[in-house]
Image 1 (cartoon, rainbow, N blue to C red):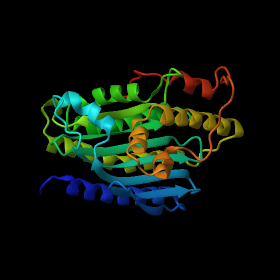
Image 2 (cartoon, one colour):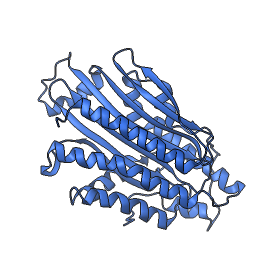
Image 3 (cartoon, rainbow, N blue to C red):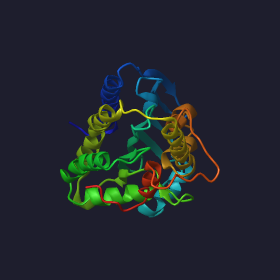
Length: 305
């Protein structure tokens, strides 16, 4: 089978279908509503959003495939890799899936996944993506499970991948102005092509397995935690943690920037934001509280495996 953008695009659509089915089953009552959209410059997408489910307050599983003239910011970013030979009339094609789930229960974590493929008409092509977890309350057992599942995927493909991509996630999902990580990280990689003596085909197999591990890993965490009771203090803390999530996505997230700068669909790009979030002036968690414990674990370099 020839590996080309049509093959990758078709596989991503199938993955979107399977993830939506799994999340609907885990939620129990919520259903994804689908909206198809077109991009004026070329391409479009298939947005699926769930609101007010039994578990999922707001969540999206978004597919897009866009193409056209390569934006100037991407031309600048790629100059170094092609010896300044990129033509200003270069074309690009980008396709991927982006997922963010905001649960109702603060004991169920927020999760994000993005896997993407990008190519240019000069032959440049690469894979990117990753999965990261943002618990409102960090539970060591859940953190170890989550990172353990990602390490298994990485180790099946290259011995260096988990540590390298885990460190990359720690550094990427970092809120600089707060000096804290967004959550417990996960794995993150970008511009993956012929890395570590791996062929594109071998890296594509790794990339696909990252996408396939999302549903069973997150559905396990949903089922484990969805029936845990919570109080108003914990709900308030959830809103504050969501506020941090908003800060990261609007200030630092490259996917948000790419979507907006390539004239993507704004509603789909900003799907990652929660329905409700909170900010309090100079809020400090109570001493020795679960909130303070979580706050103390929002830092780089923690080993969860």
